Image 1 (cartoon, one colour):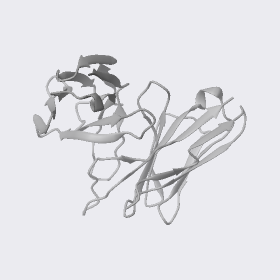
Image 2 (cartoon, each protein chain N blue to C red):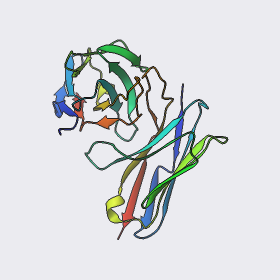
Image 3 (cartoon, rainbow over the protein chains, first blue to last red):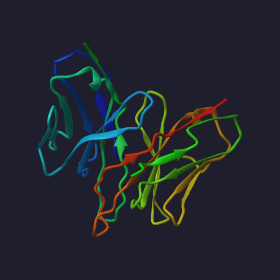
Length: 115
Length: 117
């Protein structure tokens, strides 16, 4: 089955700095790679995703890059703000036409943005 | 529109007891998945149901079971509770596109936090 490794486990930055979180996956068939943000006591929420036919995707201050050859993908947050403080999870899956797909999550990165 | 709703939000059980957790998906979503999130870890897949049929099962013992009802709501049952079952249980629904394909995005509920003493 799929295995997702995520680094670092904690990341502290100053407000305005950039933050980068990296993930590797094991199953070369995986074709969908979402990132979820989970604030303390809240539900995980999708912040950005990328599919295997795309190398990079950007949404305002957030971007994700995918290297299929190396089987790794990264989340980049620029101009960090205190409200970006949360736990971020990467995940990977193979979306099949049958409708069955299950996300394999990394262990999470706790991002702390200090004012 | 209401998001994914789960009940109860918190519960405390003792070892050996049984628990039932409930989930209502977003209106129009026919697929429901269950995930277990142990403190400090990422969510781990337990079950996926679609149109009342089990589509997938994660690496969990037979003490874990689930079902989906005609209105697409779902229940997760855990029997013979162990201390290690203490976790946040997340339900997520997903949307089917035309042709039976899924977007991949999961919409999570706030979870049911189970503590086993």
